[in-house]
Image (cartoon, rainbow, N blue to C red; front, side):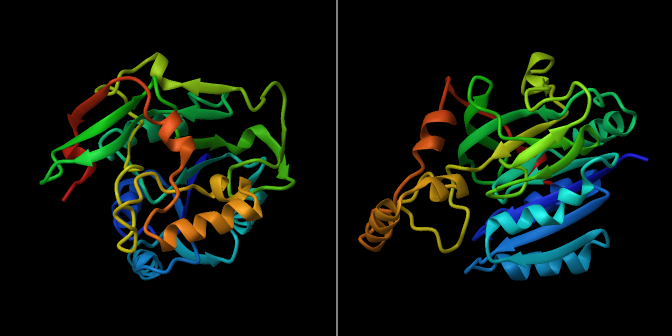
Amino acid sequence: MTRIVGIVLVRDDDVFVEQAVRNVSSFCDELILVDHQSRDETPSILARLADDLPHATAHSVRHPADSHALIKERAGEPVWVFGVDGDELYDPRGLPQMRARLLAGEFDEWWSIKGNVLHCDAVEPGRRRASGWLAPPARSITKLFNFAALESWEGSVPERLHGGNPIFKGSHTWETVRFLRDDYGWEESPFRCLHTCFLPRSSRQPEALVARPSISDRNSASRRQRAAARLRALTGRPPQSAWKLDRYRQGPHVTVDAEGFFPG
């Protein structure tokens, strides 16, 4: 029987992480909540969620690569693995439809599914509307993977669901991707995400930091670049993620209805 396993990997994400987890809670049969050395209130939030949600467990890792060990043994099983970050708010109104379609086998021929996304730089007071850049044309960041399409996923993995050496079954490849943008616009999509990547994600985040560097940004930096980044942070000029600023701000800047992303 097909199951959906969510894995949430976060670091200093205490602004949105509880909403991110609760929005996907009913979509997942199992929730793995992973903290990577947070210094804000994120660990206590994850612990509280693990106590409150019977299908959730809380974990801590010293390096983001360690998170992959929590899911790699699912390779070959009838499992969809759903990666969620602390700044990714999925629309809980569309997820029941998406869940039913996954469990019915509609997407079994695909390795991964890419949904519709708004890369958000503003949320109005009352959280009724949000503004930013839509994917498409910007890049989608959804991480929903069909582990039944795998023989194994070993190798050097910088964080869960990235890199390494996945060995596929049959005709599946890394490029066997279903883009829901081909079927749905933002308003109709059953799998859409409000990506709050250009908003403060942590109570500790400096105001000057607009696009927080990702794990891949930090991993690809040289020792000299990391030292320069620390110096810039100390002088109130924290380094921004050039990747996010380039890939997530494409197309027109739009405003959409966001009320359903903040239930309750």
